[in-house]
Image 1 (tube, rainbow, N blue to C red):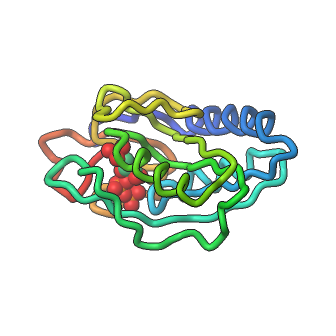
Image 2 (cartoon, rainbow, N blue to C red):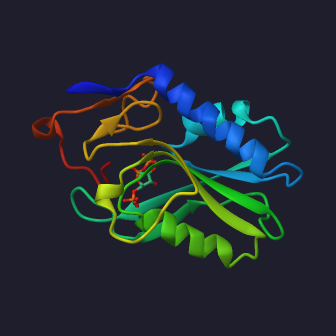
Length: 180
Ligand code: PRP
């Protein structure tokens, strides 16, 4: 570990603040929250509990292919939604937006299915890493350009269950298909 970047209370405060905003913006709209597996599972479960309005939840699993430390923008759907998004207000829930390639592809994919709206909700935004212009509609925390782990984010699939977010020293990071 390098250092704790966001402790558990900072994360919960950010999640609750997004919950208040979404509850106000989507009152009477029964939004469909779409969690992108795997990283978003913990954020989505806390966000769902922070909402005070009726909503439904579904998941997609995607993989991005790229070399070394960044995603390529080619997003393959490994597991699709079970709920039909047609005529629904969709909120895509992600743990982190980095290059923006995954979310911009996902938006195109979901918009082709005729939802009423598609918005982005991300816990962590790394604006300095962006390769395509993308501003999340709801952002929890602005993150530094470091390899971050915990609260759903993994290092080689480990540490997702840690309740805070910490960075790993760059010299210790081994290459994996996609980084954050
Ligand atoms: C992370 C994150 C996003 C993507 C963001 O997923 O959950 O899906 O990378 O990167 P981008 O903005 O550069 O496209 P990852 O591939 O690490 O998979 P995981 O959710 O299973 O951990």
